[in-house]
Length: 62
Image (tube, rainbow, N blue to C red; front, side):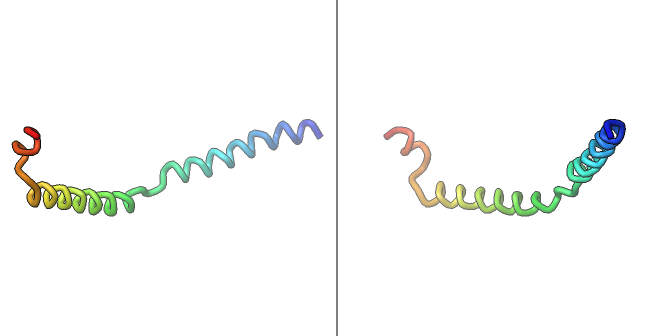
């Protein structure tokens, strides 16, 4: 029975490594599109907030 346990340990390790390898190699490009769109919205919002407020020189002198 102990020999069987010593044989099963490497098999479980290889199975776990295969699962981890497939998870680590997954395609992650789907999140980039939404992140870039969010960054573009953030930049637009920052440009709007500066254009509607006082000029930068007046704010820094206060």
